[in-house]
Length: 233
Ligand SMILES: NC(=O)c1ccc[n+]([C@@H]2O[C@H](COP(=O)([O-])OP(=O)(O)OC[C@H]3O[C@@H](n4cnc5c(N)ncnc54)[C@H](OP(=O)(O)O)[C@@H]3O)[C@@H](O)[C@H]2O)c1
Image 1 (cartoon, rainbow, N blue to C red):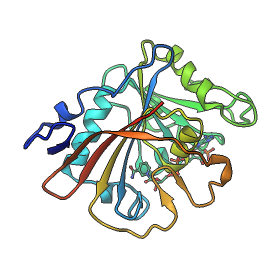
Image 2: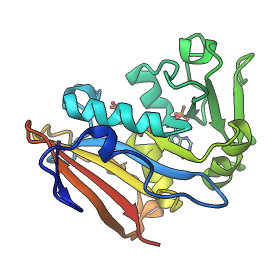
Image 3: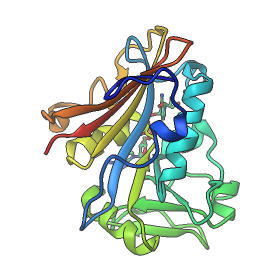
């Protein structure tokens, strides 16, 4: 990739461009969101993100996964994207769900690397052998859940949300997103209303104004754009 900001670089390796998370918190894990969106904001082609992706974007995702201690995904994304166990030793994948509608027989869970994130009063039965992080009554208290992840995964410093939009919008509404690693695919798709961080109908409860600063901007030869944004606090 070619870096345009902060210091222009004619050719820079993805590993170097995404060497580390953009910050750390002393008291809770750093949360970054990793997503790809089309020029019109669409986040899926035929219901999955793969159709938007390119070789550099896949390398960025691999690199960001290598930096994270825990990955979290919404239950829909876990279902449609077919999440398996992570390749990084010790890393775990948390599936956020209120309904418990997850495939506990998938390798993600049978490997012991997947776990559930839900509320204290969620009505579903947690499958045998699956760890669960609970926080909140009536709805998932995401700040508390994020704080509790550190007890489930020792030394957890960086949590990566890989979406989807529903989970991302809840994280943003709770002002938990410290870093946004957003790839832009050079196409339009026309998936009306759904964007990287919410969908039409998310409603005013999720409305907010959180400012981010551009920490890095890069491009590749396929016209993809790779931005790293950090929350201005
Ligand atoms: N372009 C990209 O980078 C990218 C990345 C990821 C996903 N995607 C695409 O996005 C689409 C899926 O996104 P989505 O927005 O529909 O779903 P999502 O965020 O993956 O999952 C939504 C589900 O997760 C659970 N959930 C999420 N946040 C929650 C919260 N705060 N409290 C309680 N439960 C919560 C609920 O599960 P229950 O219903 O089980 O309670 C909810 O129905 C797919 O098409 C996928 O391919 C694209």
